Image 1 (cartoon, rainbow, N blue to C red):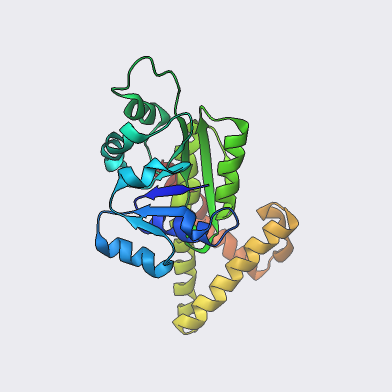
Image 2: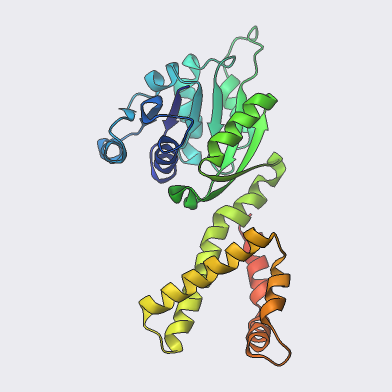
Length: 267
């Protein structure tokens, strides 16, 4: 099975790197395209067995899956470029462009195609987050015109890069806020806690190590115990204790409401 990634920037490059380390694709099965020699050289340094080219059309011809990993404003022009060589009955098309809907993708893909061609393109919208770089992404996937086998294939591909979840397209924007923008929100808490640690007397590097391992411990508790955050909070709060006092102070400053407002604003 062959896969082409059009656009080998931060996200496309991370996908290629992760897949080359998985069990589904060898590096030689992966073709990466880019506009600049610098980007292709970066990909060559990651794995010299990648197939690298500036030519999107050549890259797409022999691929079973085509990932469009360019900025949203470039999606239409890329599709118009490769559309003449796409084989809707054989290829799966995956877009990771935020905000570009199935309706828009279908319109771009089927534009100017003879009416006698009745095969609908198999399209997936995929929304990973930047943790895909370390194979820890929470990736949302929506499908259009796909069979169960095709859905399972795409899920298995992105499960090699973290955790993949199939959702309805209508939830894509909410998922982006919760998981993609959510990475930044989580990091902002970590940064604030590090700054607080410095105020408490720790050196910055010490504070960062303490906070990062504390957050990792909290995550491991939830994953291992399959528990609710509030249940784990209850284990470390006692009446009149220092933890409940700290939590109450955070809530008085609008901690929870600020997080919710930030999520809603990111949709």
